[in-house]
Length: 80
Image (cartoon, rainbow, N blue to C red; front, side, top):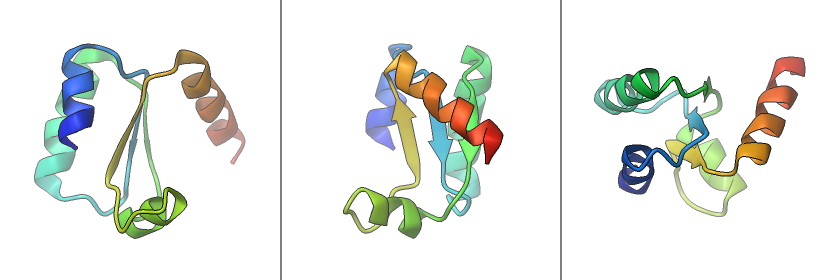
């Protein structure tokens, strides 16, 4: 989470992905920054499921920095 927040402060994040089960405090903190920056945000899967995709135990927040990758993810999510 700290790495994503640092990148958000530098305005490098193009898409924010949040796990469904992150804590309310974390969600509030990140969502307030995302709203202020008008960042698109997706919420899905659990921390464990997202972590599994990346070979880690749990991941609650992902910040996508690549503009084209972010657009592709958003496009796919609209059709899901």
